[in-house]
Length: 401
Image (cartoon, rainbow, N blue to C red):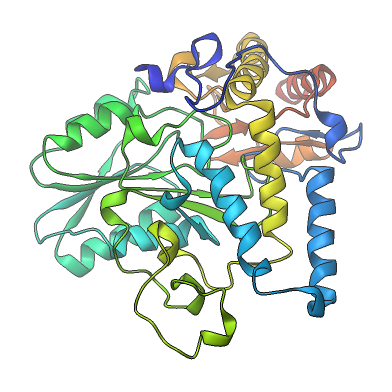
């Protein structure tokens, strides 16, 4: 694996966060409202909200309850602050970011602005998340192209499998940074170089990695990169981020609302229609982007993530998943090797197949994980404790007896 995908002690930090540290963080459980009897290993499903984020959301709702206090600049101030903070996660600028409601929305923007010719193909992974599959299936059908689905490699080396699938007919590779079922990695820097040889575009779904795994748009050079906000970005549902490379920022948005136009803050002049868009990727913002209740929640989550530092989040979660993995192996479970998976993800596989209703049986003990494909997906966060781990492994051992 290349340096971009290293985990634990080998992690590469975001270049614009200084000083860099890979020392693990202490427990952050007190910042969340998680009762002691809950062992929540399911951040890849949906993260809890920080207590401060809940307060920020309530404050936003209270502002909407008194709309006479909201002025035109208020429709833009939180949006622009969020854009600037989010840019740090991508190692990009605020002009490169659009505010969107979902990963599927951002992927639809990408599909609308990328060229696919008859006979070409679009590369995706087997069992890839549906939002990053259906849109490309539709685009291929519309243009006489086809999908090239890369089978799951027996050795977990997605990178080599993807590179081998790229050829002169490749128009787009639409990939995650890590697979949503088990966290197995794709070395995006290697894929980008392979695409450069055939003038192919790279679209990346970062929903299961941004905020917990280092990403550098200057190294990866994606054409588009999207992330839903309600998982590793500690935000609410119906929020997300879309990175758009500079060469695509003059493209066609999905919507043509007034607030994506230049000087839209001048409400009294909105009747004077204008062709000019706001600079950068702002033309691709979703309508009603100001969302007074949701955006403050996402903004607070991102600010906390940057305060912790991505490198330290990676190191901490890597330590947690490694501890779980070693004990899971003692129970006879199969675990992807550390260098082949993201440090915040763990897919546990059972040699005899998944035990019946194992997710429900763990939930009966207030232990929460997900079943994805043939994996028991375990995705901890900074709120998990040693006691959580002991409860999870102890209960799992009893189930397997």
